[in-house]
Length: 174
Image (cartoon, rainbow, N blue to C red; front, side, top):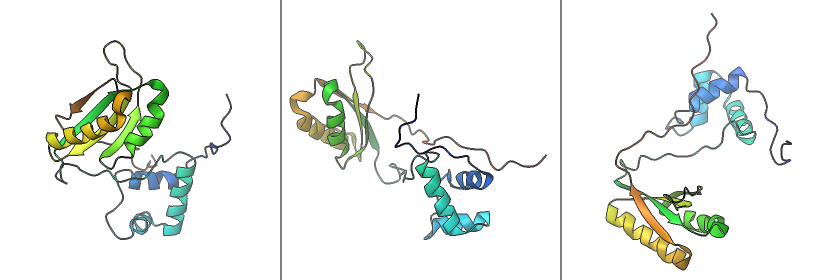
């Protein structure tokens, strides 16, 4: 199996890269210049920290940098995963359109598990109430029209901590 030409070759992660990953994996500091704060804590040059993070992202070690808001702290108490049964041949295009709605935080395709689970398109909607979520899901249903065969809303019942893979702290000499 060959690596597609658009995929950059994976480079080794050295101890400095690892230290940067460990220092940032729980989030960036909430200061005006977060990369400078990280650099200071690691006794590195800020430009080197930013260059290394760009390289780690370009080779796929870091998938993305993004904000993970606490919806509850922002007043959004209802979280509904809307699930949709749409034609497989249209799921990518419909998913891109649904994912573009400002009230959809993320949207993705998943395989059906017939006969129990006919849904292949998932779109997460957050609202201040279940009524607000239902209204937004109705908007998606209006957009999808007769291309949707069925749908449902699965509401969150508890908050799960969202984290990715975590590396242990720096290795120490024994």
